[in-house]
Length: 123
Image 1 (cartoon, rainbow, N blue to C red):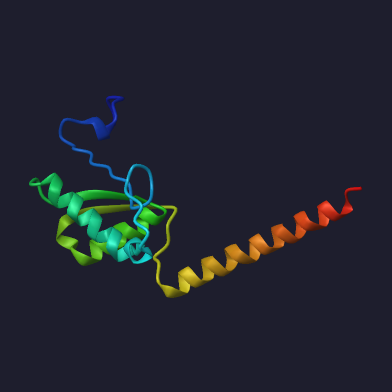
Image 2 (image 1 turned 90 degrees about the vertical axis):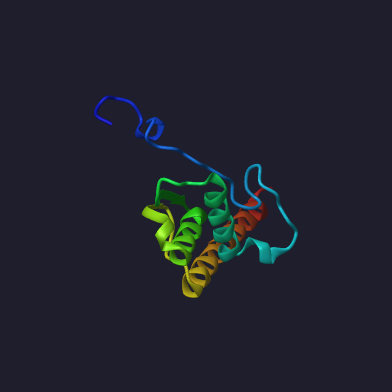
């Protein structure tokens, strides 16, 4: 802000944060179905309801997986959001997940091959 203070600590702005399932201090249920983007978007909407944001739509920041969750929540209940700020994320979807996963595992396979070759060369 022009005065040098953070706009996040303004008396006019309330900041609510939470950890997605399995991250930070949240619970980590063993059921993998509970880790879907849709399930975590429902968690986000529940947090907003619990925070009782009576001042109208909120600004939401989503980073990485949080960006996917933010998009799903905004699609489910757009009236709750004024702005979305998305960082280091994707629009999601089956093709994105398959592409990212395939690329990641190809890179991991190449890395394991390189490490194995180095170990064989050491006397």
